[in-house]
Image (tube, rainbow, N blue to C red; front, top):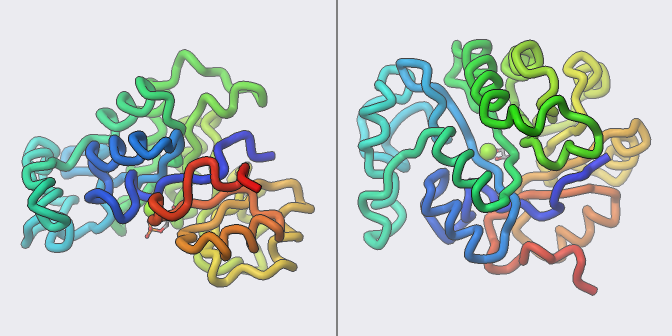
Length: 255
Ligand code: G3P
Ligand code: MG
């Protein structure tokens, strides 16, 4: 049902490092995390890169935007200074760079496909095709090998449908802020293995319905240990956290 790790470092290193950078991945690794979530969107030339916001200004100097910038130029942007001077010069990485880092270090990936609006199908396709290529050794997937593969997730149903078309054997989770009445239909259409949702809107009843239907249940973004324990008791399989300083990688195995 959920063959993956239970505690996942959000955007690489949570609040301890600049999000969606290789430094963040290293930070999570240094804290003992072997599972990471990050956001992927396409450059102007169709290269998947790690970025949360379509527009520059928050994590890289603005103005500008990802969809109108070539990957070579995106990779030169300083994605670390906004966080602290210690990370000045830390660049935007490609998805491929991060995937290779994760493979080399045994880090499982929840790849959130985060298309710039209007680029849903294209983004799902590019991420799916690259992932298939990078994980060809672990394919074809079978249930016992699932943990060797990343898990795609997205708020964009279209992006996930596209990923399904181009990499049917890479598992998918549908990501939604609030669980809508048609959630099960959506999961079926995507042939998804999991539902990913905001823990703030989750109820014990909804959690139980998702689990009884046979799906994995993942929550974002849980930053308080007590809340993490509570939702795990409701049947939540896993969650991502920004507070990798408060919630350890082995948190759910502790008494
Ligand atoms: O994948 C879970 C979570 O990352 C979704 O929200 O905005 O942090 O990407 P966001
Ligand atoms: Mg995300």
